[in-house]
Image 1 (cartoon, rainbow, N blue to C red):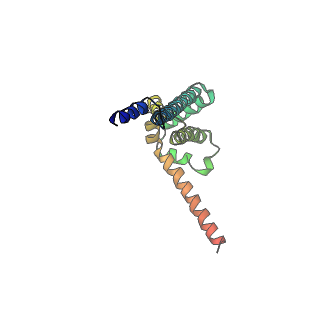
Image 2 (spheres, rainbow, N blue to C red):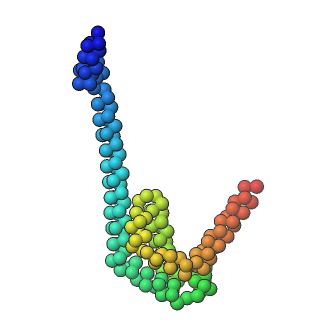
Image 3 (spheres, helix red, strand yellow):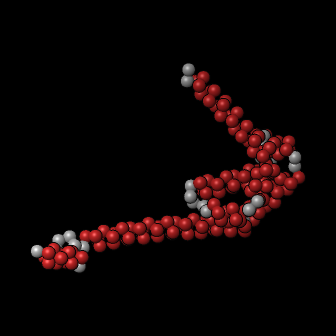
Length: 167
């Protein structure tokens, strides 16, 4: 009787008999699924880094962007807080200098959205821009604060008006 049990055990290990190879099929399915997930994650990372590289390279050679960046840097370096705040005023919307500030800061915002959405690679952008973004942010704080204040006022007026019309 013990020999029969031994034969059944050997047969099941060799995949002979009922359900003997089900564990091998299960392990294979798990391995294939794991490899597919790993490949998908790997490819997604490559695609993200490729798009980030392409985006940075295009900016580096785009003549319009380069010109706007030159104007922006000049404003950043040569204007005080009150001047920068003035560029955020609605009456300066058509001013070339104010437009340069908006173009560069909107570009940063768009890249941040791309990072947040997982489309662009944060580490690659950090390596490329290093301290540039921090320096730009620090110097442009007065402009950014003025834009936020104006936007908040607009939101409050809009909310106030919509509340009154709904009464």
